[in-house]
Image (tube, rainbow, N blue to C red; front, top):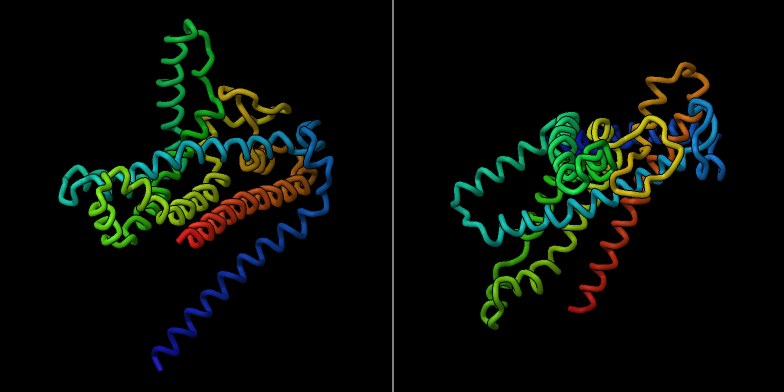
Length: 296
């Protein structure tokens, strides 16, 4: 009796969550598809962002997420490998590292933005300018590089935890067999552990992409621009981003009713781009899993 009641309550909670998600997506789709057109997706904004399109924001968002992924995956995977394969389980350093990762996952996003501005821009960027550009302002300013690195720090706990869980799921016997055949630790990790953990690594990548694509607070101080009708061509360029574009139109527009259709359409495009990036990662993960299954 109690078990059936728990199952019914759990199912009701799941249906409620699915209903809310469907209502949100339906509302955005209903009001967002009217303005969608090829011109809207491929042109730059104009006339105070009440006309034109959002292509610079689309390009900036995709470029930002790609740079973030390139930065966070090696760092997160190597951290997880060190914690699980190399570090002593009783080491006090490992305990502190795990505690730091857990705390990092709970830090508000706006704090990452302030850290990125203080460390990446004012410390690293200004240091690069003094060392290589005779103090000329080149990297010591908001840029897409610093925004991507800030988002990489924000999403790193997700990648570390997901990778470490996949490493923990690999049977110890597989490692022992590799050692018995004369493999070194590095060879064992590269040829036995990493191929089996690839699914978990890509799962962490998918979660990181989903979170990074929708974050606004970390990029407020590190690279996002209010209005930039051209594409970033260098790593030290500023950029437009869909999430920040939505925030600006929702809070800074002098005519809310005039920007509401553009606002809904931009939200629709942001969701579509996020889903597309996630589905691409899921497709890559499924192809890799299928290839590994055939090789076995």
